[in-house]
Length: 355
Ligand code: NAD
Ligand code: TYD
Image 1 (cartoon, rainbow, N blue to C red):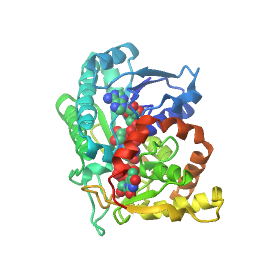
Image 2 (image 1 turned 30 degrees about the vertical axis):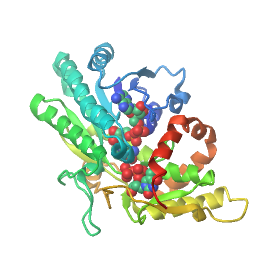
Image 3 (image 1 turned 45 degrees about the vertical axis):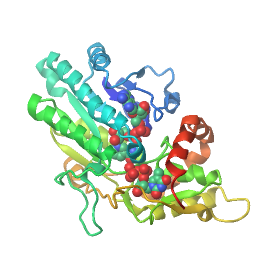
């Protein structure tokens, strides 16, 4: 079996659902259930004995050690993290605690467990660390996309905490021989994406008749990957990646934010036209930029394509249409995650941004 951390979050829950579709291998899913974790994402697995959910904190080394000893997994796939850049600007502490200290404690528990395995189980064992392209910093317009050889230049507390965790993972391979794999992926989008991030926020605000807050000039570029393509890349790296190696994962889909927002508006104009006949683009509102905002990210995914034969299945057009349709079909899920805590965050992040 495998042990997954953070499997009730956006990418983690998509990974767990996909895993149960593609494999019969059991999976233990450990998640703290922070504001970003939602067991309802896994509702379709109720009664499915392949999936076991455990609420817990990766920073609790005793809990992690007990789980590893009890279930004897052949792999750990580590998603659990604080993941939102704006939140890391408002309050970096949780990012240091979970992304750095939590990863350290998980590595320590895994290192102790790895030592107890026999030679055959050690050879087969893998620790897959899920990271981000944001560790590489910001690209200029003419720069080539990030390869695995780019130096680390993180600019936000979020990306700095992820960079620190990547370094720890690397060190546990070089120093202790832990068979680690690291993936650095570009921006994901798709079902179960918490509506604090650009794409789901724009969809839910548009439908609620609220402003669509575009930071700065809206010309920052991200490289978008449909979430199930990220999941298939992780499965492939787990299956065939070389321990100690890192793999960049991306969709070859660089787009400025304003183009993303206008595409969402156009899809909503088609799929859920406004009763007054106007376009959702009328709700676009340029607001004060994010401090230290990275201008451009882009991933060169040649290595994972050439060495492991992975490439994305979705185009941006197909993925964004599916995503908008998913949010239209899951108004209950959106209402449920927009709890009091969510409203407090929206007030804290947007109230002081001048239009
Ligand atoms: P998310 O914020 O949606 O989910 C994170 C999950 O981790 C939640 O379920 C949360 O409850 C859980 N968690 C947080 N702290 C925990 C702790 N201390 N112990 C146990 N569980 C804890 O994040 P996501 O977007 O699904 O990202 C998952 C991973 O992928 C992260 O490591 C992130 O850095 C990485 N990543 C994300 C993106 C993206 O576009 N979202 C892109 C590349 C890499
Ligand atoms: P986000 O989804 O927070 O991901 P990240 O910062 O990790 O790339 O933001 C994606 C882009 O969208 C980023 O350039 C910031 C921008 N953005 C807005 O313009 N308005 C918003 O309300 C949000 C949340 C993000």
